[in-house]
Image 1 (cartoon, rainbow, N blue to C red):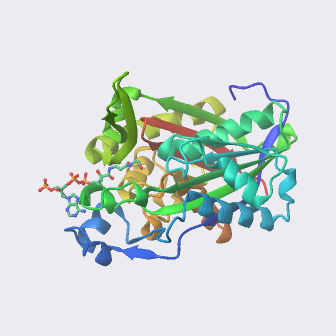
Image 2: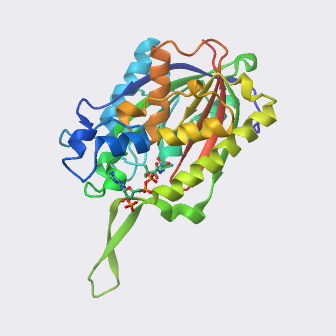
Length: 335
Ligand code: UT7
């Protein structure tokens, strides 16, 4: 661990939420020229959930997921000290976390957004763990939530078929160092490739006789799928190996591989490169597609609901995406 630790950090509860409206591959083939066969064989996705209600936003999904996590452990929201909302599709450019803070009644929490696209949840979990390890806070709510359906170009078949909306939340609590769950992390960025996956800022000039004034807005999501694919399958295994080596944990010790749910082929390629048995991969992208910052906590919550994860299991968690940014956390699960 790179940080000075006076307390451990433990995940107490998880929760998740997805919209009710489902868009399957056959329906999407009525929007763009594609097919269930192409989408499923290239990505592993069969359907995705889409937020369709007017003015519904990432805030609504984040609130639902957070309340589910809080209810699981009957925690009074006033006991939360910090809320980090990992999102790249906020309802307000100034941030959405404080709206969640207000709506769930976390009256004593400070709240902020963290923008790192599909790596957002991993970066947020590491950030939260630092506040716990240093003894600054006791209870932290970390939410990964995105509604990229509002930002994809629904005429671009190379991207609109991939993304779905969702939210996942985890509640972390400080604990003794001997019960620490966040064993190690590795975070990286390479802005040289930021153009490969982005929602670019766009501006138009607003004429004025005094000076140039600009009005801002954002374009649609753009992704060079091939390049991002290559980046993911080359960098993620290296990130995982770095983390494992510094802990002296071997590949055989890994119980679960929980990667950002971008593409089934990426999950398999990373597992194969590391010689991790494919049946250790946690995946649910068949039902939800790529939900960006939500994908890891959503899949974690489902795996827990299915009682897959046992006490002291080692879970390797990796996120990757726009930035480009990628990161790994090694978790030892304590019930
Ligand atoms: O969340 C952040 C991280 N994201 C990722 O890691 C995503 C990484 N990239 C990928 O998962 C894959 O690159 C994609 C799933 C996006 C694309 O798969 P691919 O195997 O790389 O396909 P491609 O882009 O090379 O396209 C192959 C062909 C092209 O046709 P031609 O040029 O060979 O004639 C595309 O035009 O497939 C065509 N194509 C489609 N055909 C039917 C692209 N999208 C579609 C589509 N339906 N939806």
